[in-house]
Length: 345
Ligand code: SD4
Image (cartoon, rainbow, N blue to C red; front, side, top):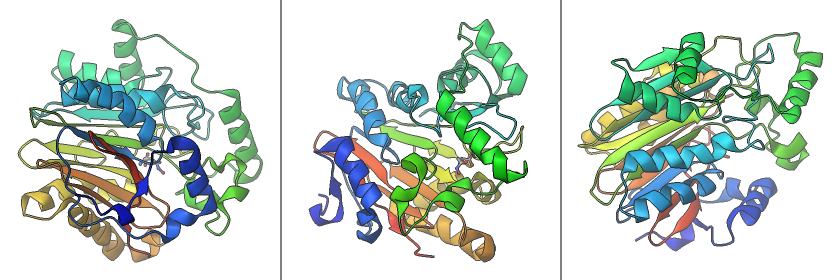
């Protein structure tokens, strides 16, 4: 059972959760237990917008559906939400004003599919699934990914909303067209997060992991990537082993934050391999975070990276470099927003 003192009950759902986030209370809450056990089926996902995503994934899981279908349906929620400026439609563009999306998906059989730098498609996760199921390949990028999507019935859509265009034009005024390493931390005033315009820059990728009633694991990860990145920059999110990894014998892991450091450490694969060696999910995430910090302490102190993991038993956990990360859990008993362990770097 979960220790109820150690999580935020989300019965009041999104409004109060945002209030919690903006007030900064989240930053002083203790970490989750090392072994948060929950019965299957279960779905977990990154950030507070994971609550709504879990809700749709849960519809699939609670009806006895497959974890692969659950994670696809779940992450489609933030992908289609124009208010979410870090995933899918309405995502912040690159420095040229182009919204380029990265996504990947992995099932219980070790199949995986991925797209990177995909423009004009609201649901890159579904294109990634189609790459997995209809091609002999794993990854399609850029124009080729778009061509594949259009040939397979996806509709071309302008993903740049007026709000995101405005944010990009604001950024251009002072940015000198220089790509940034970590727009979230640059703009996120930890002392007073509500000062930021719409508090919009400090949440990013959705990574989701699900364990279905049959005990099978799948995962999905989707993002518009680092805001105002170089055109052509690809983060960790569409890279199998970095932004997402699932091994149905052991568990799954996904990541959020500055993708470059996750790629350098093959983060999600590392978390799963640590769980294979017997680490509990949170301990595995912590070890992966600590490895990033140890290798590049000067970079790590100015960035956020968070890992989220779910094992075959339905135990889950997370760990992040900085305060501010949260994740959502949904099973038959609970719909919770949890604050993971942090290094307090
Ligand atoms: C990436 N992990 O593209 C993703 C999301 C991101 O700051 O940019 N977060 O690196």
